[in-house]
Image (tube, rainbow, N blue to C red; front, side, top):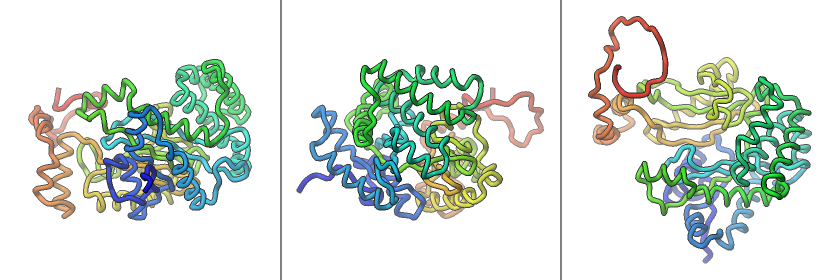
Length: 396
């Protein structure tokens, strides 16, 4: 029997070794009924085969196309179809979280024909060509190796101090043309227009990102074995950059600094995921969604509750809102301060989510030292003279 390299979200049991952390959690969220866009995970075994043999498994392409066809049925869209295009994101997902170390490409499947089709179907030409310019920039950088700053120079020449959201449709179309010219100049080849080729190249690029210098250094610093490989998650795109009733954000089910059980996170309206982490625009606190996107905010509150009841652990998650509807793109155990770790562990025992033995194991021994630094008395009346982000534990 042929080896299975590709699994639909939720098809396989929770297995971080095989599916990576992101893929395993996408499957779990699908199973518990959270709104996860359909997709599939290419296993870490396929990555290890690719690294060892210097090429992907011979039957990987056929398995990918089989799972892709299942996503087409679920979404009622077709990959590469100009009239009703299905687009994909391609993201890495190792067993252990390695934030920012490996690669992501969004909007796979766009070309001149599908961008025009997306504009017509959505009734929003600006959104379609904003997505197109993002594809060429990310794909050019991550997959084709064109320096990110060269794309930014083109973009800045049009922005002239304005925000990305202020660019007109005609400006975005011209940026796409200039981006493609840049790719051809730097790589000596035209930008790949065939959706299937884009997908194949993006998957290979994510496999290869496992062995980039920054990923290797991160693994050494965090004692992560080099031979694990990464899974690849291919997921139907949902669009946070579709206008004022769309957006993207990141959130924690509890405050990672203090451990307080409160709605903690940030979001941007009319943006895609990389805009939040790139610092291009200033995000808003997640509770302001109640005013901007009330229906999605109500869904988000349910997500906070469902995630903690299922995982029995504080979660760090990513979401996108398209047309007022919330979609979940990722969840993982959230990093926290030593102070927060103690409070979360104690509170979860009180809430009957975990037992006392589990609570003790949740507080890492090497983090106890942070709690022994001198602290400001939280009950003292002090005059605030400045505010900032804490860079070290204790009081200066």
